[in-house]
Amino acid sequence: MLLGVNIDHIAVLREARKINDPNPVDALSICKLSGADQITIHLREDRRHIHDNDAKIICKQSTLPINLECSINSDIINIVCKMKPARVTLVPENREEVTTEGGLDVKGNFEKLQNVIKKLHDNEIEVSLFIDPNKEVIELSAHLNVEWIELHTGSFANVYAMLNSQLGNTHHTIKELELPRKELKKKLKSSIKELKKASKFATKQKLKVAAGHGLNYQNVTLISSIKHISELNIGQSIIARSVFTGLENAILDMKELIE
Image 1 (cartoon, rainbow, N blue to C red):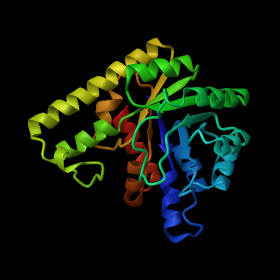
Image 2: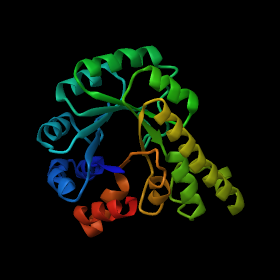
Image 3: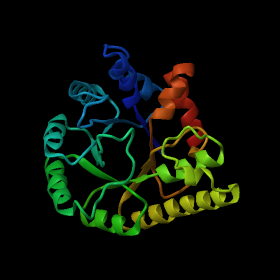
């Protein structure tokens, strides 16, 4: 299973003080030497962390493939096409969200996605859709002729966190927090089963399957055991650990858990 290291949160630290350090570009060689298989970045419409110049330099200098996440906004797509990342992962964006809250509305944006995907393919860029583990959405993704889908693992991660009393996650509702432990275990088992079924179905549709969102050192082995998922994209937990252990050790620890 491949590991894409999302380095957005290095830029988050930089933007906290609006200075030049730490520079996400400095992570490129460390990620490669530590065994990362790809670099993932998200060029958001509000540029809250990664800036255009960051993305441009990272795409130009990285010896690892770049997976660039972005919305389907036409201005962003025009910028991304000039940068020529190996892959673009199309994601939903909400200006008020702390992090991506769910999968892309493929059905509601089908026609626009057709145009965006064609433009990316014309620029020789692979395309992935960040989606919920839903059979109908996977079928629509296959009809759009993308190479990849990335399954949103946020629901799984939230239930896992609640079950293990990691209650700092702002996505929990009061109702969810009051669920009995037995019910949470059922929900966790159900979310894993859902990801297994979705990834298996996607491979039958000739789609390559990645997964990501909320994955960390505690829950990643449950996802890395799903054989039809071939790649994980993980960022916040790796960068958070790197504050204490260094980026190299943080990546090596994650690789060991995945393997």
